[in-house]
Length: 418
Ligand SMILES: [Zn+2]
Image 1 (tube, rainbow, N blue to C red):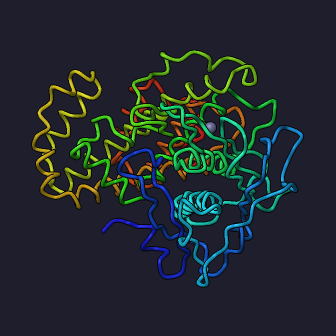
Image 2: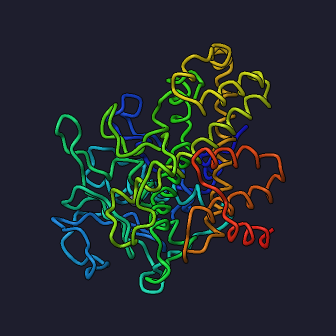
Image 3: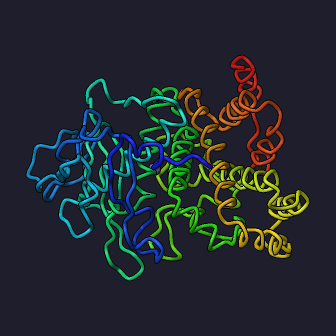
């Protein structure tokens, strides 16, 4: 049986009702109940606890450089716990739902990464702000994580309807990812900030979101059902922050190599946010590929597919979409139809293999003069500690395909860490 946060926290935790994906997707129209780590009865109105609090302001502008929490203006009534300390009695029609929704999802994402790390994540801003302020709505077409706050605006979908980011798991998880990266990697000085640091921040935050959503059984089941078990088929796992059935903010599954992107040498403060996101995509894609490869490995180890089919799929994926489409993956799809639960367990295993390695890599990196060569070497060093040489070739191949190579400076650093 694979690891489940809901099972883990059910004896002592608190319940929330959340959307695992944007509710505009047919399979996710209804919010589902999750268990988070907050000890039962420990959450106050807001919700709030010693680490964070949600509040729903009336007519607030987004925070800017000179403007920091706490928010002191007018606000709506807070979400209140039920008599047992849970918040799942609140549904989407309740005015307090969005504050509870943001809190529940941020708590769930933190739970995922605290389990991988084996302990709580301190806020990087705790010297001035002991708690994170969660703002479910400001009049703005974006969302951001800053010094002591996470706040959400909204975006129009294809039909022109405004969709609040407070209801979008991927957006909330991505913004929480920024908080996790700041906490684990740290903040560079103006002299040691690199464009690669900014790009890595975006990539890691997308990966935080991708791995966090895989902690919903409903999401794993959905992805495996629509792909019939073949993760090389385009699916929701590849997309972050969906705004419609076919449009999303960016794709974690992509074919970009380092030579396809320009700008990593540009001064870090002269580059706009959109370009920064793009510069992170080759690394995001490399880690996505690792997830799929670990999954195939697990399917082979569990005798669900033959090793030569996994190898054929791998080789085709390295070549082109056409080569991939030409592979006869019927044995895989038939095996999935026979044993969907074991396929779900294989994907959960792959998720945790990547999550553990990424969490330890984040913990070990330093923010100064960061480059992708150092990230690659650190990831390989972490993996070597966890499983010796078993997965080194697989990880190296995923990085190499993206033209991300562990540098000599970084390798020396990696070997000292062993
Ligand atoms: Zn971001």
